[in-house]
Length: 254
Image (cartoon, rainbow, N blue to C red; front, side, top):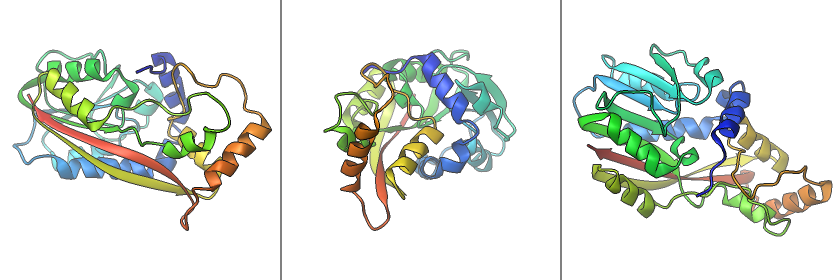
């Protein structure tokens, strides 16, 4: 699957650092869902939040595991600067973790691995986990942002969302990476927005507006925007214009 370059991803999240928290309601609810799905186990010694963003999950993990040493890792230094939890901060890439082999007890990552080549990210997670270590990951599935694909379907031929792995693909890749007790669950979270412009601004505010090859590289014309807006309006509900997150959670052990 074609992903944006690391430089483009970093730039997008650097820009979104100041707006992320105000727009990340669904992202926070997914962290809470992940925490509830963690199997009961003895308290881990070292916990990594891989792709921590501004650090919301770190507060949840700190409350759940008060004796654990927390590590916060993100590609964006600007995101890391907003982390307030007591933790070690690392600027780095999920596909090339700056950590020693078998150094972690829990690898946690919420809505970050969809920006990565998933086989590589899972291989790195497996490398840094100790025997008996636990994996907890939330990613996004193919129905994510299908409203945007609908809006632009009759407007242009460009890509307007990332490509996402299915639940079966994620389970298979986790097994291939050497994980056991692989458990994949699927759920849906939906945001609602007053209008099309507000919906697009919300996507940008969380840094999720970067795409790989096939994206539009020129400014959209007013006519094209209007056509997409009209198409999106056909999806309006009593709550507003919907935007779907097709959430896939993965738990496993080494």
